[in-house]
Image 1 (tube, one colour):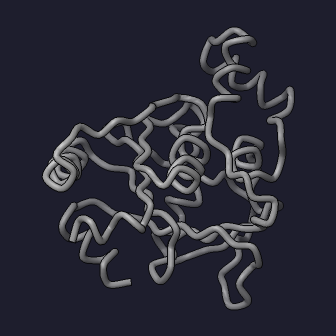
Image 2 (cartoon, rainbow, N blue to C red; image 1 turned 60 degrees about the vertical axis):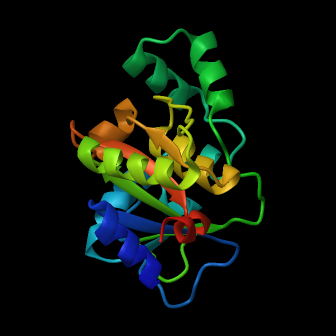
Image 3 (cartoon, rainbow, N blue to C red; image 1 turned 135 degrees about the horizontal axis):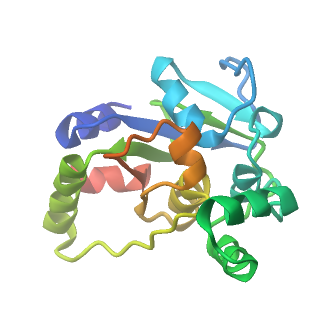
Length: 200
């Protein structure tokens, strides 16, 4: 999709196309081993890859993509341990994290530049500022976003941008910072591709 490459050149940074599937594409690169979704965003730098539920080893992503209604006690304990949240706070934040409400979604392709549903980037602040300047030039308003440190890339950014068709941001979560390759000077942002024509 030429408008994605044009947008990437204009904004700077690297933008990764993400597509959600109701049927796994036939001609697609599958992963050799399971991984968190946030790591797949980084791994896709070497080429697009498609993940089904069994290819993702993170209950947070399962919940975010509508493949599991709850995250499970072990994942909950991990969130509590790494954030210092109390259990009621962790449960509330998980409930508030976006999840895709479509039981037909069976897989996700990361690194799709043909027909992606959303774009994700791990942006440096200067590139984020450039995007914000463009946003305000087009919409003549501030960009309102909700930011969470729980299931940051899979839920707050990917599922959020897909479900709401709005720009979603996150500074990451302990898991995505540890496994997803998000540098200390980066923030995660998701943009529905339907908005790209507004920025051309």
